[in-house]
Amino acid sequence: MRDRILIACVLLALVVGVWFPVLHKPAPAPLHQRMGAVLDQPSSPNSWVEGVVNGYPVAVTPQSLDGGGATVTVNNDAGMPVPGVEYGTYYASPPTLSDGGTTPSLTDSLGNAQTNLATKIAGEDLANDVLKAELRYSYTHQAGTTAGVTVKSGAGFLHALTINQPVASSVITLYDNTAASGTVISVVTLPATIVSGPATLTYNVSFVTGLELVIATGASDVTVSWR
Image 1 (tube, helix red, strand yellow):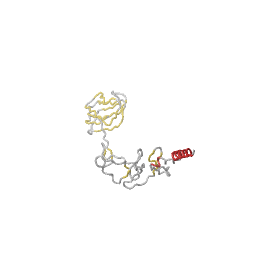
Image 2 (tube, rainbow, N blue to C red):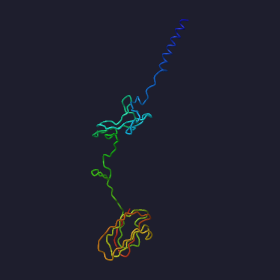
Image 3 (cartoon, rainbow, N blue to C red):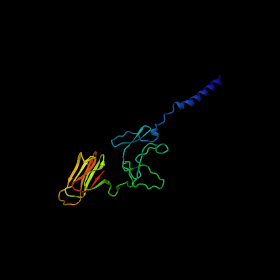
């Protein structure tokens, strides 16, 4: 009888020793606390949310940084940055990398992300901080009278009419059409006595149907600039 009681006590001790720690094991700290993330809600309008760690917002207050200071880094227990959380580093002087070198994303001294082009793109003038644009047009030349020349079919843009060689009493007409009729864009009538040389008339207007050129009476030499 005594042996049975002893065996029962031993078994009871084993059961209690195994299961009691399991049943009463304290819950682990939340994952975001073990990661070392800052999780307080923003306390002022100057606070902003840097990222989310497993559903927890990470609130960070912007501050001025010294050279090499990091805006925010969320690390795990091993001290490594947590994937998926954006962070950046400010350098007063950008680092010079060797072949194959890497660098974190960069910020300015206030923690704002920095993105820039280190080399010029087509048309860029870095010295004067402007992007140059060059206007280009097609041209149609006509020497002498014509009952109608279709300069362009379809919608387009009339830049200018250059009268290279004016002839007395010449009448030059431009239509928004593909025939010598319809909507008139311009009618230029040269005087009976020519007192000046070549001239360029700038229009910079759009047309819808097409561009038709007619030269009557005097055989002037003209060039139409369009696109």
